[in-house]
Image 1: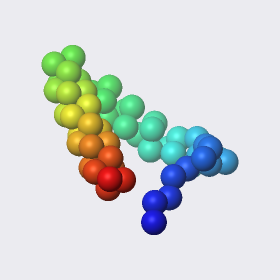
Image 2 (image 1 turned 135 degrees about the horizontal axis):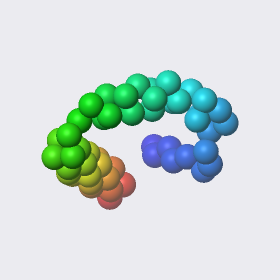
Image 3 (image 1 turned 90 degrees about the vertical axis):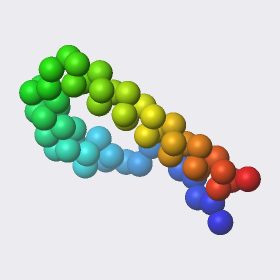
Image 4 (image 1 turned 120 degrees about the vertical axis):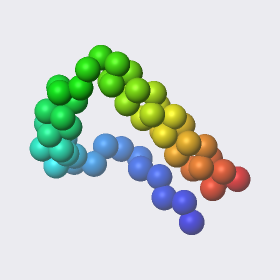
Length: 58
């Protein structure tokens, strides 16, 4: 069984706002070079997750 969202959950922004704020605080302390590395890692991790989800659909 595959469950996919059909819309944005109500109240999602309010629920994740504290985490977003804390992550923003953490990233503020990073140098531009560190942010580049983090961005690359997050991009590749997101791609890996998407590829895994796609394989599960096959």
